[in-house]
Image (cartoon, rainbow, N blue to C red; front, side, top):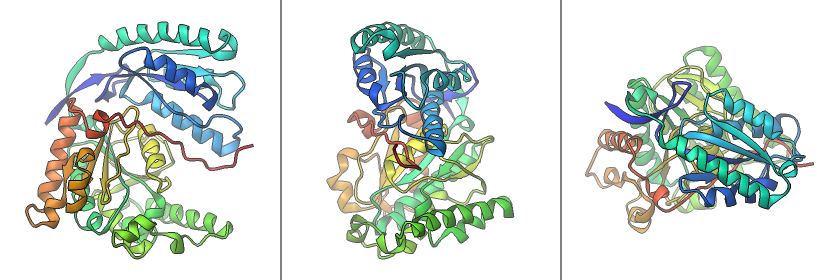
Length: 385
């Protein structure tokens, strides 16, 4: 099978063709939103970070913002900075320029304020839009796809229907030569040893185990008993009783493919295959990390009906709960509750999800895109100063 994608200068292929107006800091987020609003086809990010950060925290923010600019769903990028922030706009632009796509920078304190920056920004983005409209599309194999797999608002049907079906779809993408990510470190707790058995080497397996241990150790130092704080109230209302039970259902999203490595948040993989990405369990932050790692499309399973989207990547919503499938029909792309009702098998719904991925890669809009959902949040690993 193939899909009609947007070919980028570095050889990667996008399923969307956005012009991104990228704020390097929260102080330029309003300005970028004003610029993007004036040019059809342009998008901006509601970035709430970029200043008063140090060490690993600012490095992760820089990597994540650069990853959004580098994502193949983006044709061209205007970086807008304030001029005194921790994330340097010019350095951010250089990381994105490595892909070969057009990138320019405006710094508000250098241009002379918001109004002038918006005026100049509109000129640049209009020019970028003309460029994007000329980007060639070509038929390419499914090995060019990078898919992130996420769950949010889980319930008992997640572990028996939507998550296993998403795992089948993930395996089909990997079998086709593509790449998939599993994420959410806290949702491995109690099941990490099972997932580690699928690592391609003892070293990768130990890395996975240690990633979960490090997360728990950090919470322990802060006096937090995570196993007593999870599942969330919504999970409990949905019938989940322990974090281990939640994790055992969550890891089904990983399918059965070998795990090549454990990636840092927003880290790009070096080869094609299946990966685990170290991320929080908070849906929006986890989604953001996988897109920064290069995911063009996300699979998002939900038992309760979570309407989260993304500014630059289609998010395919999958639900296993028959009642919520009806209530949240406006937000759902694939109804996996047919498994619970005995009308379809896990394998059949997994194939349906796979086919939905191909249709979305060819341009079909997801419900989140139609509704204008563009949630974005970068995971923080340090305090603000």
